[in-house]
View 1: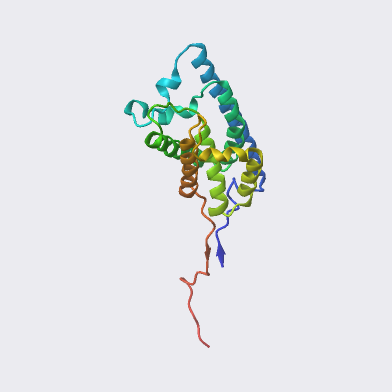
View 2: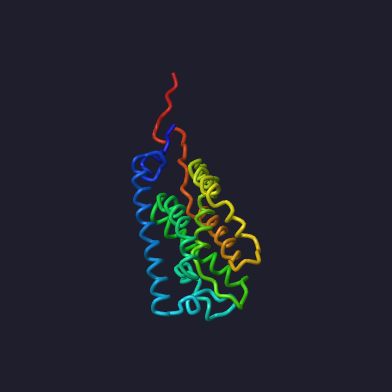
Length: 217
């Protein structure tokens, strides 16, 4: 029997390479947050008004470009503070599984979350924030635990659930000034990304007799 193992996979859980990748991912995600703070500081300090000009304005063509820009914008520093820790935590584990998968998955999440908001949100609102991406990363980890049979992904989701489980109600309609559509479609985008960019399991093949001959006594 011939087995094509995944031992060469640098991101396989439990290997030294995986922990090194986890460390690099943490440093990278920690670098993303100051970049978001810099954008918010410039927006407020220089009165750019980026929320209104680059946020998602549902059902309006001039608000469609916000699909790509809105995850980098926030309604003030309090909004950004609340997103920073879960973004670092979830983003670290998603990025540790591979930079290419991370980038493509993030793009899918941004598109699904942003377009979902644009089609279903209130045309009288402007939506900004990275929370859709955060819920997308949560969807990725949960779905990977199922499709890739990865128990450590389940462990991460459990940890996040214990720390931020109360925020999961954000995928339901509410009277608060939050975009539950962004959360819901972000979560769905994460599910889609996890399935599209899943890591294939090793294949098992039987012995190869194609070049052999059979001799009878």
